[in-house]
Length: 506
Image (cartoon, rainbow, N blue to C red; front, side, top):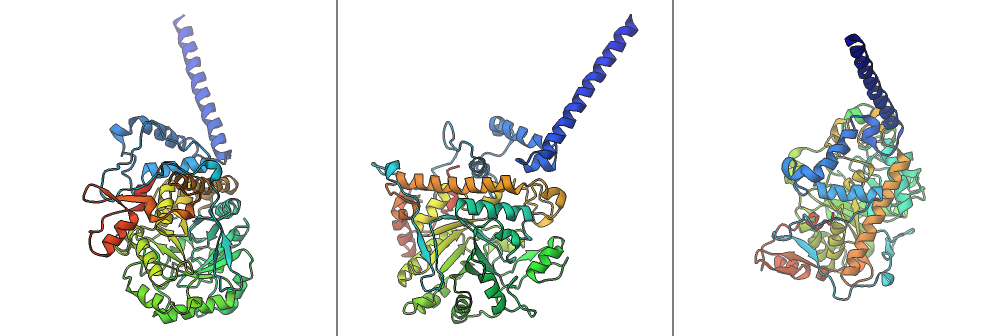
């Protein structure tokens, strides 16, 4: 009798173990075949714990985890808003904002007592870039995809960005790694970036090739060219692509050796003065017939006077746009001293650039594109109110693809398949599904920036001005941005930390 009972219990135990094993097998198969979650696809079963702990964190983070706005470089509130927007989920929040409105430098927008009615609002207006070009570019998009090279990010990531950008009607910047077939296959408008190594448009000696420029410009999708002087994460140093990421295909596209570190010069050797910069811009513009701009992070800004004074009476020679990067911009790999200590952040450099353009009468001849941690609607609205025409983001769109801020971009081991060339990890990123997330993220940003604009009493985002936003000062009272920047420039008020990311509404 006892043995019969023990046998029954053993059988029941084994049956239970069998059910657990069967359940794990089914979960494994489901995780490996679904295309929505890269972490679960790459790490079946184990990956499910990410969402489990993320859910628990909503209830227990006050005891065990960092608060919503404490993480770096992007906090949980910023990332969570992007994830929800990209998935098409509800982006509203409950109970109250976790954003502290009291510190100096906090930015907020000034709502109007009679906001613009929803039915009276309009989509962002269309503007022209390159009025002196054979083929100027017209676009209405206010939020676009910043430079991410094929090589720094994976093939499926480029495919997803290309398709998503085409669906959203925004442009996609190639980054300095040249134009790949995957940038083109989605049908998006393309900005071709010319880095210091001239990947994709270089001759055998590494100099700029007019012949290859014409070949790139022959693609109708390539709408503009951007000459990169520097980027925020590593000003004064060229791009760095570890040899582990330089595959045969990437080497062919860039025109370099396979398997060797791809390290660009720290600047263009041909450009050593404002005069040479303008000559270089005109060369690219005359060869391609398309708008040409420059990208840099602002540091020593006296050169703006030298450059702009030369253009006061010759506006046709000006760059068609300026992409202004921030000292806290991102990259796949950078020396820590540069990423931590060199360059101006966008909250300080953007108003300086805009005011200089106004001083020399070069607005709107030179369009301004702002970048650097601007991933939420409040960030974008801040940049537009200061004077930018566009905002571009790389890391925001990486989050839309599923980036979890694992900080493995330079290790070729990105767990979500975005910044790796390991096939087993790339498998987790389905371009078709992620393209939809790119589209939804871009459209949600645009829609909620329009919502902020309506709250301020204007009917579209490009009508936002500095008077529509205020900043807290050490006096304990806020002033509008127009007055604040004027007083700072006149030495009447000490500049304070006004990071645009504090405007995030996530």
